[in-house]
Length: 531
Image (cartoon, rainbow, N blue to C red; front, side, top):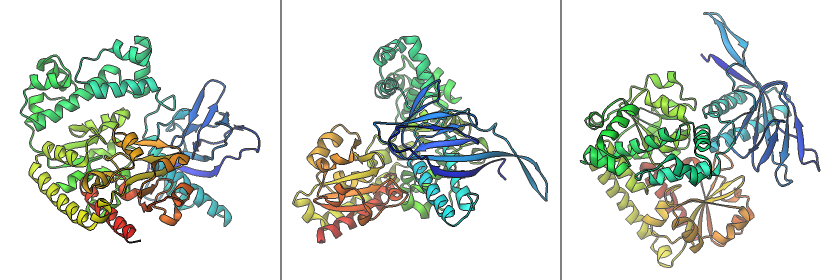
């Protein structure tokens, strides 16, 4: 039974008055506001914050705010009013819940940027509530409450931050640490890089990220040290030099402080059999390992792996101790972006040793080889790669005509605020470029592949990046829209072939997922080449 219930009362869009760039909003019950696209500014007399898509602010009764549009464009803002209850009494015959808001954050609490799933849930809630209203029904229907429960779990899992976005200077400092952890890095050096006084930088870094500067730097270094311990015969002194520590003694002290064991004890642990994976699921499956648990949002985004994951227990967004207690894992695989939610990372460390691996940095085959080394499955990794490359060779022969004539290809993703163009580390783009050998448009090569980063563009710039074969993921809803459902004129008038892909089939492109994405992309290209 749930000890706390959040019950939806109303879901609607804020009504902007024509010609007025601001809107006064007051609340009689707990309320969440979330812009579905664009940006809005919120003022409450004490502070001003900006909200963008996939971000939510929670406001308690008695708190009134002024919402201001950005650039005179009134964004669609979803308003979710609800009430919270806690289980007070229960026996064999009844459960008694009483109104209790103590479980909610303080008024004005704002999430970090949420996953795409949040925007999907908001749109589904709006649609369901409109349908119910049209038929004279109330918002207490089971479907509404199911969606709202998932929305609350997703929102409340994220660490509380008093501001909406990281300062660009803090993001710059984090990137610098991740790229230069092997070298000596001082607090004053990072403060100068960020443009702040040292003491203010330390305060701001901890406030924005949830870790102190030194603790964050040590965690990055220790996680890279774990990789060397499991994948090489390097001595502790050699590893210390590789990850930025003065000597092996200092590394050992920090390693034990953060993990509870020495580097030697970590290295000599038995090969893990029970692995909880909060990314890298496709890699594990390609290596013949079924995880003992994974993240429920990750499963929703791994439709191509549905059969293999159907009996795998999932942990929802809250990652609470009760969910994690029964996993009995030997190892937890997590992505390094979990650093940005310290509470979640610390809870995972309580159940088993954690390996936080860099996500979206290596090409898929290099990543698979790394995971194989880490868990003692190097032979399985090479066998899978051989199988994958054989399938690539078959596909290349089928598509040789398109490849030989120099057709270009690229992967795009529609969002409410523009279009992403994906680098080869994500969304199956590796299959197109490195595996099949399709050329990217020159603009994609210059602005995406050479710098090695994904690119966001405004929708009106899409013609600059058009390809002969355009693979399009519609992230504005929870399913592929189909070619005829693509609503942007730039795609409708595209000079080449446009293929719609399912977001939930291309969310991650690791291991087994990449192999199955290859078949989908090949079939699209074969149909397109025949038209």
